[in-house]
Image (tube, rainbow, N blue to C red; front, side, top):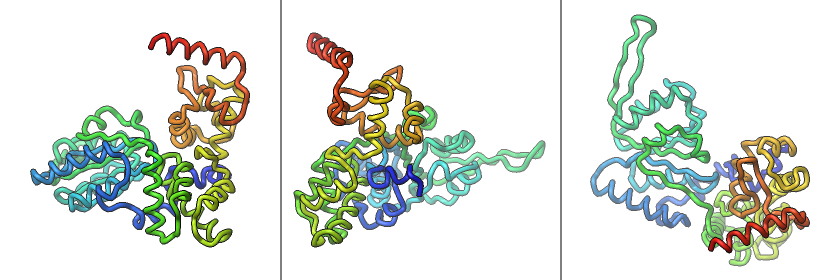
Length: 354
């Protein structure tokens, strides 16, 4: 395993093999069991109930937001609630238009096709998908050269559920063909704590409210991270304690993993430290930050940035990323006088406008 993988082993919201093995066990099966995302759940519930009342398949649905928030889980829940089959694939797995044609022709009426990382579909594949989503037909070219013929196959009415962490990379024509768009936000601490307690109950791990609260506070508002940390704290409790997760056990386990009270790990601190120490707090470009710490720019953008933006530790500007005074304070680094003066001026301007 590479150092880059090690650096995000526990705190990364991206799915890992262990997560996938336990997904079926820990995944809620109904919308009522799903914790958090209250506004999304309310809107999705109306969509489901209306479609059931009319006896129609669902409109195509797009879930977007940072990784680890439950997009795949919601796709399975939608299939369960509608009592239909679901097929799972991912954008990078559909390399040729023929791959997509094979999938679509095997769907039955009202089936759901879930496409993860839908923004990574190739242009040729998208061209096949447009009429399939809009008119439920499949346009194929049979043969080559002068003898080639266009063949149109009629498809049963089905539903595509797309998931993406990079909405801006989704082409406008494809985005427009999804009838329902739902953005997933980071979870409140209370919701994450409830998810931890539910996961501990399923895994038969003794845990108290205080221990669950410690894990929830360091889970970055992300259920996948919370459940992964729960498993690591369970290991610590089994080896170093009596098997029960208390506040002290959770604190000791997470401190050993070097995950601080806000859920930042060494990778996050390296990104912030690079911006502050190497580039004077910014502005600095994403590629430059990535090169300075020998990481991939996409990893920083997808994994690190959303949470640092949520905390208010960095800002995106036209000239690059800028560390805020909150980042300086969290890393216990003195704020340079010119940065502090600029911040004070911005604060006075904000108060004057109010």
